[in-house]
Amino acid sequence: MQRYFNTEGSCNPNEHYMVRLDERLDRIKKRFVDRGKYFVINRARQYGKTTTLQALAEYLATDYIVLSMDFQAMGTEDFADAAMFSRAFAGMVSEILEREELLVSKESQELLTALSADREEISLKELFAGLSRMCAEASKPMVLMIDEVDSASNNRVFVDFLAQLRGYYLVREKKSIFHSVILAGVYDIKNLKLKLRTEAEHKYNSPWNIAAKFNIDMSFSVDQIASMLQEYESDKQTGMKVEQVAASIYEYTSGYPYLVSAICKILDEDLSENPLFDDLAKIWSQQGIVEAVKGILVEQIPLFESMVRQLEEFPEMRQTLRAVLFSGKRISYNPDTLAISLASMFGYIVNREGCIRVANRIFEMRLYNLFLSEEELSSAIYDRSQGNMEKFIRGGRLDMDLVVEKFVMYFHDIYGEKDERFLEDQGRKLFLLYLKPIINGTGNYYIEAQTRDARRPDVIVDYLGEQFVIELKIWHGNEYNERGEKQLSDYLDYYHKDKGYLISFNFNKGKTVGIRKIQIGAKTIVEAVV
Figure 1: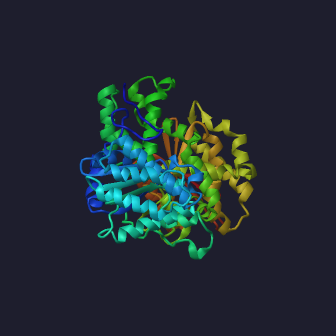
Figure 2: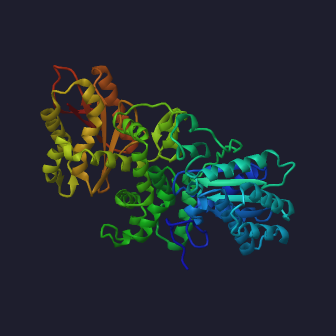
């Protein structure tokens, strides 16, 4: 069977093109498992946790007996009380021991089988006595892995289970227990009680404060992506420039595993049917990647469904992300702030130079689209651009000069009398609302992280392979404006462009609204004042 890019479930290097995990597995073994650590692989959805656990189980098999479980296999009724949980857990352990033919004593295996029988009086204490005996009589140290612990995290009995694990960990020199325990899920253990209770005094009381900090980077680097693509290229002979394609995929994904695979899967399986891409080299190019991203942005996938649900569940996180995206606020990264802690745990933000940033360009674009769509029906400037969108496309190309010219006109007509605070808070959002229907379905836009600044964000518009650089800024006098013009000229060098656009939100009463073109060396800057 030919290998392919997989976005459903765990990946197997014999079946799928994937980033090789050997280096990561070796680091986890030496830094955590060999040292007998109990820890949590707490990462966002579809971040490669299950793939890593399955590969790690095989990697550890020489030195350890690995008991690998998935809490999704347990039903809600199994968490009803301690007796139900204990029976179900003992049953799963017994089944795994038999199926995997793991080397434990016959007596301890029979004990666990007996514990899984229908006995109302069984307790967590009895369960752990059986687990302790199993570990004591095993031929090698035992490692417990539990995937999808989120499936149990809203159940009190699971917290009690963690407390028992903690108790045995603290006295493991006297009582045998697992050498290492690995839990995997989205929620950090310290945040489990967010799903159990709402009283503030109970939110952060962790039942498992023995957990070592898991600080292994599970995102993919440019080199790792390139290594995966090189394997694909050796099989397919597309003629792609592997390093350039890898770098471009990374720019959109920041190495988020699912997003990397999703782009590659679309390039491999879908774009050959698109008439714009008549050969493999064109598919595996910047133009192909842009087309793949467009597809991802309109897909209904579990990753984005979770994002929408979590934004509704945690309004403070939603408010923080809106502030970063639309107001350009520099918000310090403080993990003790609930909204920041949650957004980081879910994988939506990262810490960059002490400030929070949306984790990757695709998340940023999806969030912009979500928040903007909520305002489209009530936005006057959206209606104006939507009603005239055909004017902006000439000969299949986007006329960005006209786009900027009409924005000045519409903005002045609709918002010309608004105060400074309104324009400073709403300016970026209003421009994106205006832009969205013009390029929707054909082009993309994003805020460029390379040059992102609290006062001067760059909007990059990509329309059928042609890029436009648009700088938005608040007017702070002529000297500041001239520095902005020079900086935009430097940005154009970075993007290899000879023309850019500068939109200034000017609050002076005597301002001159309109468009002018200026030359800085060989660069042309179309400057608009609103």
